[in-house]
Length: 188
Image (tube, rainbow, N blue to C red; front, side):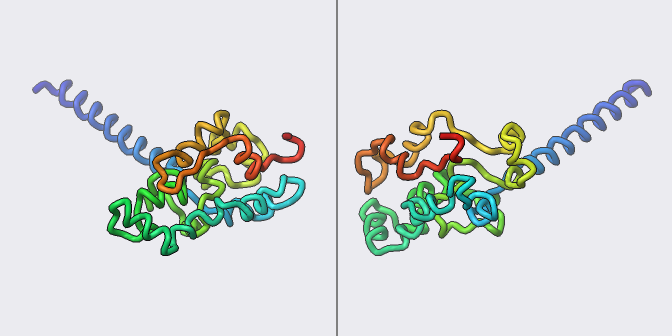
């Protein structure tokens, strides 16, 4: 091998190694985490000025969704579906009673509490990077940091509210949305 080839090879592999390391670091830094409803609420989403989002959620079935899995009825439904674990431990049940997706424990911060059911981040995405007031004041920046603002809400809702659920009832989006709608007063 020529000396020039060896030098070029070393430079090339060095560049590839640096890019690989940097891309891995960027991936781990860009991995958003679920922080839980208590982090979202703080002083921000419970005031009348903000639309009382917390009380709307707290008084909804969403806030109690995981608790419903901790009942004898839920366990009997899970057993009838052929699952050998309790409903609150069955991924096929938990996915819609917490986040609306399969739970990857590495995506959850210590502040995230599954017992709080279908929370803010279930719909709006993991909030570790957009939760700060300085970010949330700029909607575009919040979206860049992982905030999801649904334009097709009904389509999103039927990921869980569908006939795959053993307790399914006809899902009429409009009246159901009105129960949990949580606009800021000026957004109505």
